[in-house]
Length: 154
Image (cartoon, rainbow, N blue to C red; front, side):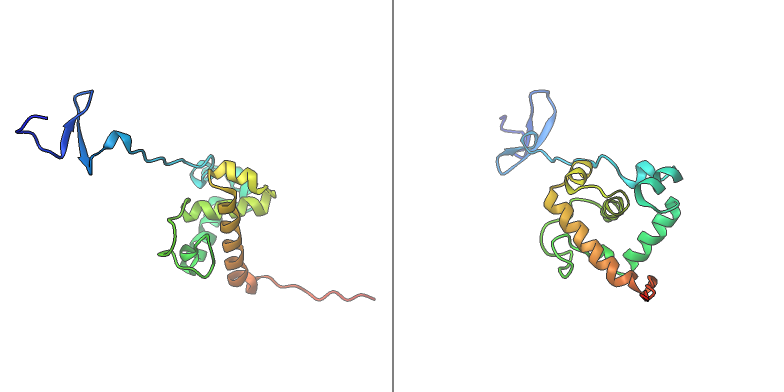
């Protein structure tokens, strides 16, 4: 390296400048971000697709339910446990809206954990934790909206 060059900058094989920290070349550090096979953005423009995947009539209904749940605390759900806060543990693998879509797809279509693992590119244990956390939260928050009549047997 020439004496007058910055020690934090090196020129790579292509002649471009790459920042080096702690002796590690940036080109060696890879950040892998994988996009799920399906997101709400993929289906929101078609009411038929929204209804097929979620059971809700359209995107506005999906979004209204999602926003209501988030305002009630769903965004602080941690996939590892309903009682843990977001600040603890690992970062989320999916956006909360994608977690909600995952839950709605499983409820509507009866998809297996392995299928959701493939579609959302997360581990099956993560799918299970997300599903359990959301279902528990939705049960607590939405139970007042569901009324069961008592069945009388004659």
